[in-house]
Image (cartoon, rainbow, N blue to C red; front, side):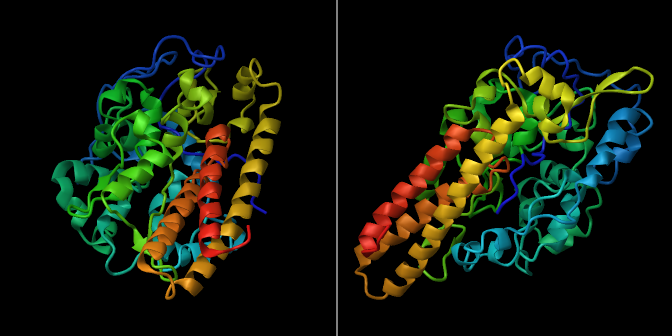
Length: 422
């Protein structure tokens, strides 16, 4: 079975002190706009001199090591979360080979490693081919982010292999600070555009995580990385599905059922901050509050560790959680077991539905086939939205179950349509 643990979901690399923000169950004040630190945190001073940038205009992480040695040292610690020994989802969920038939994810799908390996991971994935475009590098390196911000949509249309050869820096300082570590900045402009007027309703430390940990698609005309919503209320699986349906968008056509399919990405931000929002989001917390532990250097300097962790690994964070959670680690294990058990059960149901639809495909009339294909598209998207969200239900347990309920409802209608026994 799938490992029952809270993954080290990526958090912003903002240089923020978390002790004040975690002093009570809810941080004081209101979330701040996207260009400043959230309430309850203290920003570091701007550097007296900015190191030289590379050819893309990015100051590399190593260039900051003497100015911010504590942050740099803990940033390097992310290398311990390596690709070695990561879960193979195609083995853990064997139904995925059927569910993703005709799409790259059926060829290889491993659990993600840390930010230190983003370039390595995208270079080694079997999901790319000679037709892959550079837009697949969107969140793998700050150098490509800077390229897009400089060149615009044309950068998305370049060949993947050609652009990847130029990239040398995995996710690092620029992604969350541009070239000023005293600020936290959302560098992915398409995500800020998708937040719209709601950009000042969420802590910027959450938005810097969300700029990559979100549901996105590549616009058919421009190939630009884009988000299927405008504002927080629209960031739900149901609304996103309606958005894609309205524009008749598909990621691929399923080879067995012929259904126009959608592949959910990694909707951590939508799961926490979208729609009705999670409990933690409502209280004003950011991703950094849970994934960047407070630390103290040998000289007594307090800083935020840039080693992105499972919050249950930090006694300091867990101590602050005890006011509301008697046993948060135990609660997380329970949430994750419920979620992953249902994922496995529904994956088997989806697999059976796909195989039965494939058998009946040539005998169904056009209207019935279209209805059956839409059920496949919708049910699998609701399931995928939960499975690929990296907390295994811990970020928003209620929402995870709600989306799995929607998946189940779709499948029951599909089973009835095809004369299958549930």
